[in-house]
Image 1 (cartoon, rainbow, N blue to C red):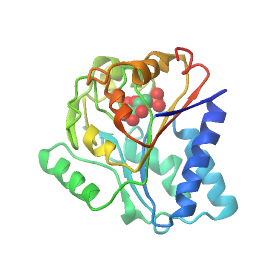
Image 2: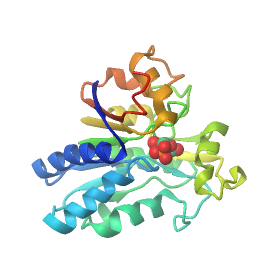
Image 3: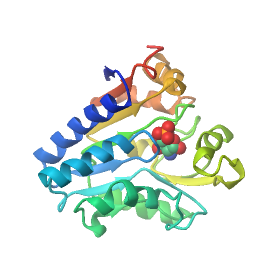
Image 4: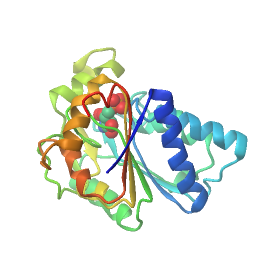
Length: 238
Ligand code: GLP
């Protein structure tokens, strides 16, 4: 696990963009594993700016998103589908049919997503981290062997995300569909981003803790190409 400490959110986003740009420039067919949440927004802004200025070509790229809420229509303003359109997809030339975002609430939906993932290898997987150490929506105690599955979101996660739902936890969905930890670990390269003091404990546990499903991100200790880009606040317990 390579740790890159940077000053702040902007520097974290710059560094993440450099890694992404290198992957996309070297391989026009790159498969991008993408994440939502506030953390990768700066990365997506830089990808959009770069696309506008340098015409980086995404025509042959594909993308697979980590997760989606259950119970929100795709067009809901807080769905991850809407998030990705708004922050990235409507601004770049990745064809619609190359974009994959899990959707649905059944085992069949999970298997269909996993099957699509099985056709490719993700070249670069972007990850954020939950304050409880979750990656994607794989909450603490999710077995590392899980593929795409349905999860019951923990209260802590719903509280953290209530800020997107008028600070009302009752509006935050109780379930989500997520790529599993085994699915995430198949990526060639993983870039985990974290900014802010509220991530410091999760980052310290991920780096120093025993590998254990109690902190899902500790599984990354086993991956041989992980770059963790953390700002000073998120790195404050390293
Ligand atoms: C969300 C997402 C994760 C994300 C994490 C952190 O619940 N499912 O993919 O990494 O929580 O979010 P944020 O970047 O907003 O702190």
